[in-house]
Length: 92
Image (cartoon, rainbow, N blue to C red; front, top):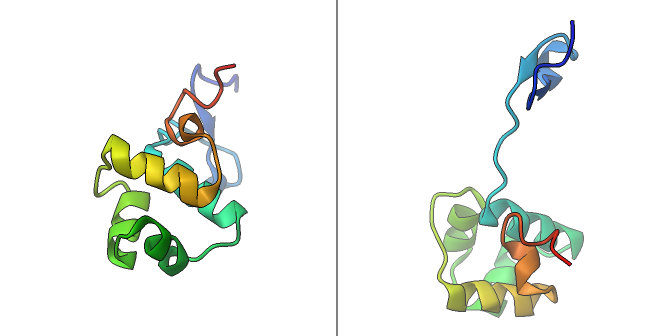
C-alpha cells in the first residue's frame, strides 16, 4: 500500500497502518531541550521561577507561555529562543 500524503506509519500496529503525525508544540520543544540537557522538571522550574506542575502543564500543552517566559526558558536551557517556537527552529 502506498503512503498516504502527510501520514506516518503507526508504531502500535507494527507499521501496518497510517496515522497523522502529532503537531509539535512549544511544550514539546521545551521538553526535548530539557531532556537533552539531562535536566529534571524540578531543576528547570527553579531556573525559570515556575512550579514543577506548571512546567509539566506547559510540556503537555495544557498551559501556554508568554514571550517573557519563553525567553526565560531559552536562557535556562541555553538555547536560542527560536528553537522553542515550532517551525522557527529550522529558519536560518
